[in-house]
Amino acid sequence: KIGDFSINVAITIKNLSPEIVYTEPEVFNRYNPRVGVIVYHFENRNESLAFMWNVPFNYAFYSNWWNIKVYKGCIRADQELHDNMYHELLHERDNNIAMLSNIQRNGWVTN
Image (tube, rainbow, N blue to C red; front, side, top):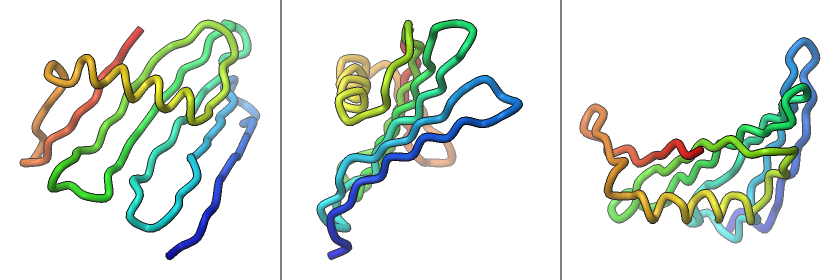
């Protein structure tokens, strides 16, 4: 068992306008998927660009999933945001499957 942990990191990059925020939900053991959200906050536009990913432990039943979405205002990267973006994929799943070198990719860009 790896142990329980949670990561919250906020970085402001000078010379670039976005702020990068990364969070990963608590991981209870090594068999959980690796998931997270990165949010770029655009200072001059009052918008946020969020990128969600979900990398499964077991590729026999699951695939890598990702979603990219622009939000109005300054949003926070957290598990609720990840879950909302993930569940949007469930409604669009059949329309967003692509093959790359015999690897199935699932992803969606929403607006």
